[in-house]
Image 1 (cartoon, rainbow, N blue to C red):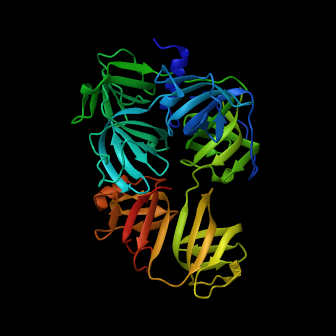
Image 2 (spheres, rainbow, N blue to C red; image 1 turned 90 degrees about the horizontal axis):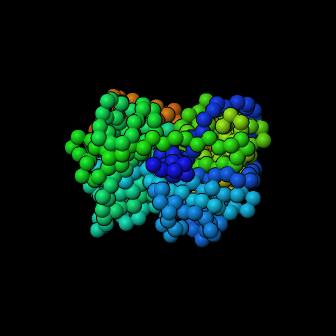
Image 3 (tube, rainbow, N blue to C red; image 1 turned 45 degrees about the horizontal axis):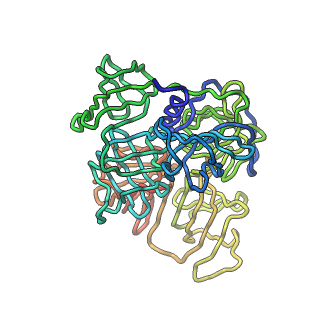
Length: 477
């Protein structure tokens, strides 16, 4: 039987950000500041992906690991056994960033079943791995393989892999680490028990037969299932497990420090939301980087630091918005609101705040270029992000007229039957002539799109957004 520390390691690794299960309910609220930096002290935990070595870098902090205990899959290891992208739990004293323990466990070890590459250069792909939905992006650390299908070590169906990452609000594992293995004598998966019967249950699309396994799973439990590689039947997506370990959550002590990286999986308000399974809130003293409290929403990626209150809720000292629902537009200005400093392009209304970069790349070459120089009908290229429900432009460039248009951003609604999605509220349609990047046709593309995905629509000759796009593709945000 595993000891308490090993059970905590497993508990962390399986969560949507491979972190703590914090019990309790939220409370309190209030407005927040818009910019600043925070700081925590005392002992606590930092949970997130490794970004570098020397010591160990996690969540923007360098932790001195001299003398620290390193644990990989519940077994003693060394720092050299860790890799960039591994989601780890660092136990440390934040006064001097001295780590006493660094723990890692992969969420999946098993075979790649399906693979759709969106952009090999960027690193974006959609996969099914051992019955689990997985995506990769530009931040994924690939080891031993590449997405470029023209290369000898190209990733393919049937490859055996180890995956570590962060679960998003849709239950998709966003891989931060993805390594191919020459062999895996044992497969493993960590997740929540669903569709429980007397002998089977589901984790993702994987049916796990536990009739002969040790363990007593219950609906909703988070478990780790292990078994021999030969016990997986890919034709039926069934896995006969040797062992089922129910993983209990951890309730940090009142006032314990905590840093977490992950996606917001439940959002009610800034005073009541979850990062993974960590119940969190911001308060009037919370400092923000990369956005504000209005930026918080389901599936936004954040990095938070703070302390745990008496109810087990993480009260944030600082929040860094890591995923800001990036927006790109290339089209003609339809409307101008000078009083509100807003433009409408391709049906998207966005605000130009102080500090935004304005540039004239047209033949007029106006310098300095200001908001007053924009005119209805001008073609502009816009980069920005979503702050709450408001689209904010960080860069606007005026260009010479051109026939095409581009709209890229978060999907806010889907209608597969009509071959339609909404990007920032603007309905975009595809048809049989549309080119679908990374998907095998019209039906497959629209069935695969989920709210929160980043999609780019392009029109070679633009007349209106109601005209089917010439190209539609899923993008790395």
